[in-house]
Image (cartoon, rainbow, N blue to C red; front, side, top):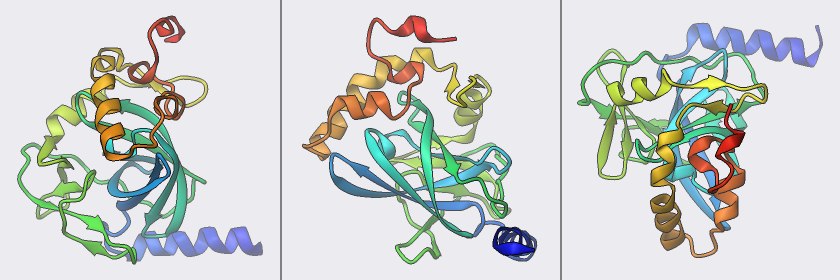
Length: 215
C-alpha cells in the first residue's frame, strides 16, 4: 500500500473513532514580528481545509503552524475580516481526519482550545471556538468579547474563492485594517505592515490604490 496509503487509512480510522471536538479544535502558532503568538481555531470546512480563527491572532503572521487532532500541519491565511474580528486559514497539506463543527445561534457556551501539548482544554484563548453542549459553534473568542456565529455566518456567506483559492468579498472590512496594524505594532514592535499586506492578499488587506485587483 505504501506509506502515503497507510497514512490515509490510519487517519480515516481516527476520524471515525475519535471525539468530534478533538478533530475540530486547532492550536494556531503564528510568528508575528519575530514573536511567537499562540491562539486557536476551529475547522469549519473539512473538505476545503478551512479553519476559522481570530483576525488579530494571525495579523502580520509570516508563518503558521497548526496543531490538530491528527498532528502538526501548516497553514496560509486566505481571508480576513478585521472589523468583524475573524480570519480563515487554509490547512496545508490537505489530509483526511479533520472534522468540521456546525454553527448555532447564540453566543453562550464554553471556549475550547488546545494546550501546548495538543490536548483539548477550555480556555479563553484568541480564536477559540465557543461551543455548546452538542459541540456546535456559537462564536469565537476575540479579546474580551465573543464574535457570535450569526455575524460569522453572514461574513462567510459573502466569500468566493478566486483561482488562487484566496477568498474575496470583504471589501468593506478594509476600514478596520489601520486599527489592526496599530494594535499589532503595539504588541509586537518588530511587526512590519508589509507582512500583513502580503500574507493575505484579499480586499481587507490591500493598500490604497490596489482595490482594482478585486475580482
